[in-house]
Image (cartoon, rainbow, N blue to C red):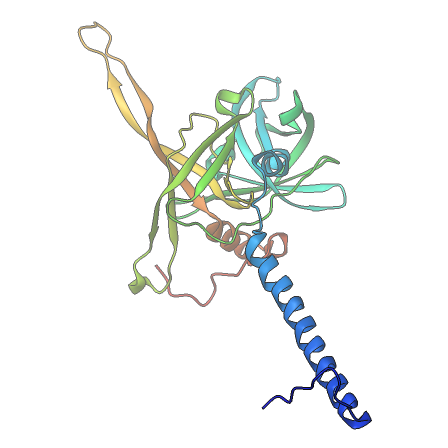
Length: 286
């Protein structure tokens, strides 16, 4: 119950002290309420904005590497795409598809072109550190000396419908940037002892894009490498000399996921090049 006083009432010193204490308590409570309102109200009215597209592209474009294979006479025999994943001093480590270098190791000069997003790029001689091309693994690890190495950042993991960027060098020409979404995320049968993801994106690619990076569009993290694409065969009719051509099927680009890249690096003794790599030793055989 609150006591009221008239204008002419005589108030004792003790009463005045009690009133001042009450006022102080009210002021402290009011101040605390203002602080809490500012903190929680600010969080609710100031959402964190995602990175701008320009910032994401500036982050991922320098990690794309063009791969050139030439015979001893200097004639180009094959081209491909790759992604820088790590650097140690001036040494740059690049991953690509295994079939990009299959059959030509030791017989062809392999070169990497860095900085192609700005033009012709800078060429560096490359060495194959590890290579596998089997039914389950299609990855190669290369290294070169370069001061333009800009490694990609690993992504957390793919999500169905997630927007992506794909970077490659089709037909051995200029850098091509394509957009799309993760159109399929499938997993191996749990009965085989592991859950190995298989990815597909709907971004269209063509010859020479194998080994190119597939990045999440939101943050620029690396999701995997272009493994290949489904094709449709077009055959000739009514000609004396039959011929055919295999053309890419739009929207069915196969991707080697980051989990496979990590496993390959661990199994070949290079687990320290990328975070999260673990050896397949001890897992159930296929």
